Image 1: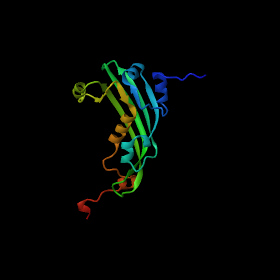
Image 2: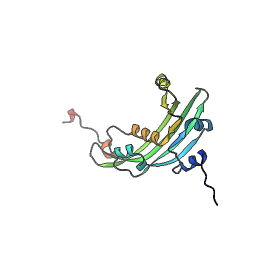
Image 3: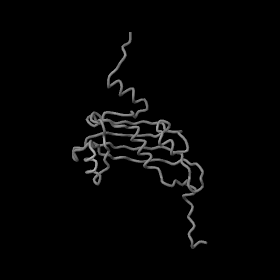
Image 4: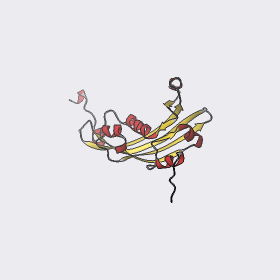
Length: 165
């Protein structure tokens, strides 16, 4: 008879189907210097999917939790890439936009610490010692979206000025 495996290690492995677990224990990840690399389907990121032309594709993420002994702080650094479907605000046609963004966050455990560090770095408030990695990747992708996306064709056109008329 095969014994069913349970416990935090098995649960962590089970949550890493995509290479990026949905959530991890922040203190353990920092202590181990955990690194995650993988893809998250856009269909699993509902707020991002709603801002795009569809839920096709995926975001690729490379994330690393670490302890910065110089600053005496816990950090989460990484890179997120993908091709996102947007609607051009010039011609109103869909186009594929290349997302490439980096993150360099300092993990904080209270709102007062978050407010104190706001001018020094980009703080991330960690609640219940949990890093919500899928949510974080989704939020970073949303923040990187252009306010008024333009396809390469419209972006290369020189806007008409009043003097040209």
